[in-house]
Image (cartoon, rainbow, N blue to C red; front, side, top):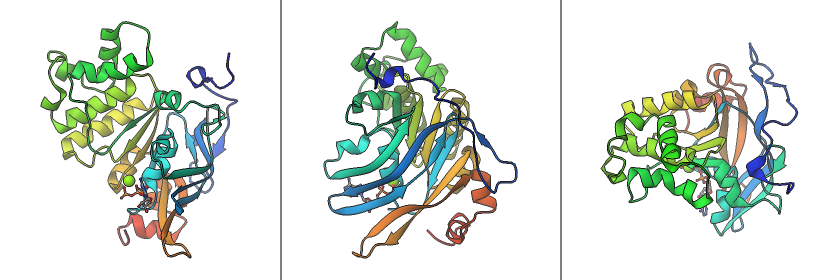
Length: 287
Ligand SMILES: Nc1ncnc2c1ncn2[C@@H]1O[C@H](COP(=O)(O)OP(=O)(O)OP(=O)(O)O)[C@@H](O)[C@H]1O
Ligand SMILES: [Mg+2]
């Protein structure tokens, strides 16, 4: 077996027990899903985000918060090598996933994106039927099994099946925005990933659709690990287990560079943060 076959990545390396310091009742992180080490990203010669070192928990929801331009999306895209698709982007450092650096030379980014799904701010279904949207990924990667079952399972997982089971062959554009976003979640789940990356997945949705997605995230974390970028403080506080607060600083060359100020249990970040900048941000004094 090739040593770096991510499809067959072991479910867990030796369990590690990282206890978050300073929390009243420390939440034990049974095992990390990602560990970024000294991760920095530049676009051309401009550093965008620097030295990000975060350990994200398996079957947890990790929220990334912070003001616009601090590098949340840039960092999120490092977690499934989406920055590879931006020619100017350069990534330095490491992202350990299932004990392996995603940036090792012999890792295939296509395999990575199959295991680590992504959902974007604006629902972006393909101009195809509901069924074909979900079946697309599994077909591309040659997933084995009955396609009807694969599609149904993904739609059920995304809490959409009951609403669409009688109109699977109709165009996805005929769905509401909230349904389209759940379809995008189903599409991401259809290739059987173990991680879902979500970049402001609710910012284009009404409060009811937002609540449905938040409920869904809560359900999904029993089987998946989730990393979410959000500008909605209530959302981060409601859904996430841990939160990383990023901010931007003016670099010597005069441009703005993002970095992590504080990373801790969500409850601590929102009730008793260690850094004044975090407190100012979460209480709305800044950003
Ligand atoms: N494709 C790109 N090409 C060049 N620069 C980029 C690109 N994407 C992001 N940047 C720059 O990198 C920095 C971080 O941007 P990023 O989009 O990651 O921030 P963000 O925290 O997600 O912001 P927002 O909250 O507005 O989405 C910004 O200065 C931005 O201009
Ligand atoms: Mg962003």
